[in-house]
Picture 1 (cartoon, helix red, strand yellow):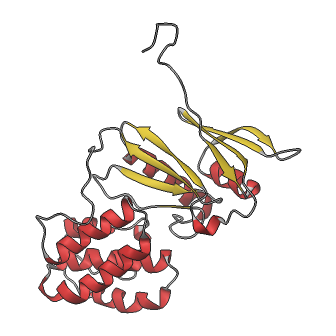
Picture 2: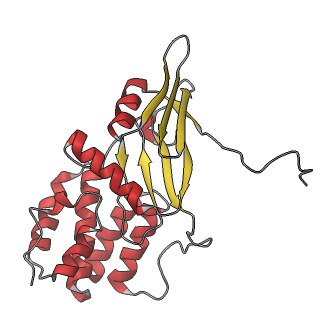
Picture 3: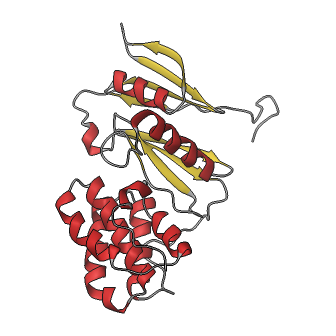
Length: 247
């Protein structure tokens, strides 16, 4: 129990391992972060500030492989998560001409109504932005109230947004579309195809895209359904060549 001399007004600043200092500086600057400290010798230390939070970086242990994407990470709790994703994706478009949706660094997609997204930095750290009112208990593995392709889509959402397992989501969607595609609604098929197109880019398997894109272009969607499909991917411009006209 606190005796009154300790006040509950602490600030925690994550110290993340950095294996790519120049890339890290360039990336966070591109997203609009201010560099508040920059040192590479005699030891590495970088500090960034954006809005009301800070990210600090120090040396990484020898042998760290950023491509494994398990270097480190932190949580950033916010009141409303959507504006953060919008700010970062807009900054990416201004600097890089596109949303970085594959490789390192990148940002995961944001589905309207979702409670979190992740920014992967050049060193393989996960910076996860989470809405404070996110449910304490999240259902993993698909809602029991859903059936067919709708349940597959829900399961893939969990795999991507909460388990950060793009490969498992890819396999679930690919298999689910084969099993349930013929009986699913046009918008369910379109969302599945859009997610597969997005994942084929993330997982660097572009040879699969034309077949899925051709199927997507044959579907008939309303304006609202098109918005739903576009919200299923990190960068809707990836779908432009495949999206069918509105009904």
